[in-house]
Length: 396
Image 1 (cartoon, rainbow, N blue to C red):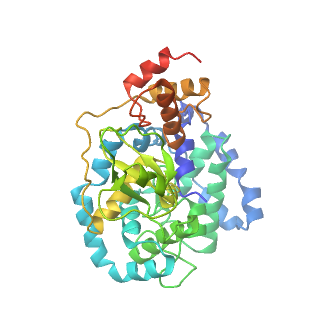
Image 2: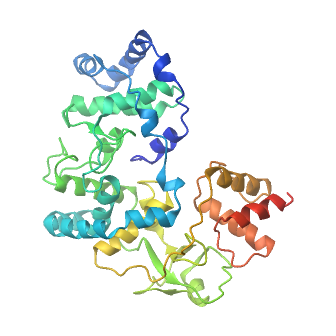
Image 3: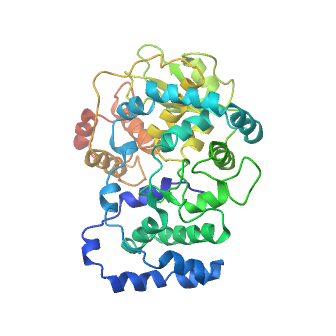
């Protein structure tokens, strides 16, 4: 089900330390052989296994490559401005013309808007410029060796062997990022086997490295199978009434309309539910999030990522810039402060997730609940230094 989201989350928690210096050649060689029984059971030949593992070494550069997650560590508006840049919008529009035929066919077949697929291509690999050049087998086995408590790494190594065994891709093709994600869509091997498709109908060997039609079709197929709804938007920028207290972050469309929430452009859906998202607090842009926003997060479980992808898609399709400007003052809490907020909210009985410093809807809902309880208005669900101080003073 995952493309790279869970893999990156696991890597971020990995304490690499001095493993590369401590590992002996005999330790690693013995470790490689532990993969063989499972590989054989799954249908990998001894010839393929030996060809991959023979001469394979640990990649000591991975700790430096995997040390940060900009989707979670940077302020959303800073991440957004880089992701939805004028240059990237222009490149997306050029790609829309160059790949028009493939995009039309893909949209008709998969039901995912062409601009969403193009934006995902841009976000994942910058239209192929940043797909990574690391040997996937070396990357995955290094992660498996350093984190024996994480079976996902071992599973993905087996999946990569199966791709090679089946002839879907060559060893030379199977390159990608420090996270083990391959090609322009940045699929892990298991995602490649499940979601990659060939636009020409050749199911045997989808080329997600050099074939734009296959890349676009594979991204669209992933989103479709993840639950994309063609009849719903992903989000809409909205304008809030003056001095809006934000009584709720979740409501039905009729309730938002009754509160005076209106679209910044176009029209809002007439029915269904939506979540209000104020990514920089009440002083910045506001969005209503619909079902497809959570589908975009299947690619990367970050609101910064999903929001940037969706707005980039709108701009590629010719839509307007945001109606509400980002605040000039950027709030940038540390991961430590964010984890403190989550832990304190949990102690107050308002939050039951992990205190990992990564904010998502559960954290925003908990912040909103605390703000409402403390009489803070607007209760925008946004974390600030003042919120940290308020929580330090709050009594469980």
